[in-house]
Length: 358
Image: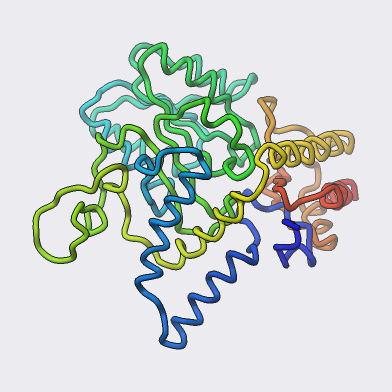
């Protein structure tokens, strides 16, 4: 039933969710209804406005977090920059992977101009987790990490990083954009101090809907204070009194993004989370094994995830075979990258391996 909600899958094997997800019918239906009303002049601006706080509530239940801990953002970079701005008076170093996605790298590098020391950690042979652990010491204030990095598909061990952070009194900023929606089972146990996610990949949302979840919201101040940051809900004049909870950092919402996000999280909330994770990891393992048998080489030796990246000998030929086989995947340099969601199946694995083997 879930697979049938994605019309794009009748035309192709979609393994490019690490870049963006195909549109699910409940999500596109919500957007179509809103756009039709806009076009016909019957748009419900108040209803559009309510979509963002409703998406906050649905997301909080999906994640299992208090609603007061959830701020509405436009991107992970905005979430990271919001947290970075709160570190000014805390001192200490920030530990971050040297090959992190830039939305979870550049906001921390910008702190160097304010006197913070940033330690950029290259990934070693053992993987990102061990490299980050080796860099944590008594001076560490924050560790910034992607749960899964789409460049190589490696999954960081947030539990081990949590234990190391606790031992020195540091905090963790975890970008879960490439995992939440598939790998959600261990997130609560790892207790990131700051959890950020952009929803347009594995959460099936339109681009522009992102969340920052933190119990430390009282330390945060909005990067762009507006009427959405205020406690009284007014529009004109007055003094700035920040809203209660993490809503104090809300961005003024891009309406259509949140109309779609509300529908997307409601859809995902109906899925059995443990079965989703098992299914996606099994498909990834089957592809990984077949790819290595076909002569591809692994990119990472760290903990695997639902995203697989392998090095291929003739990337142009692989790209052409993927296209002719109607397989939507990404060839980046000499790497082939695929990702498996709950809507994928064994036939998608076979199609990708067929293109790889030629």
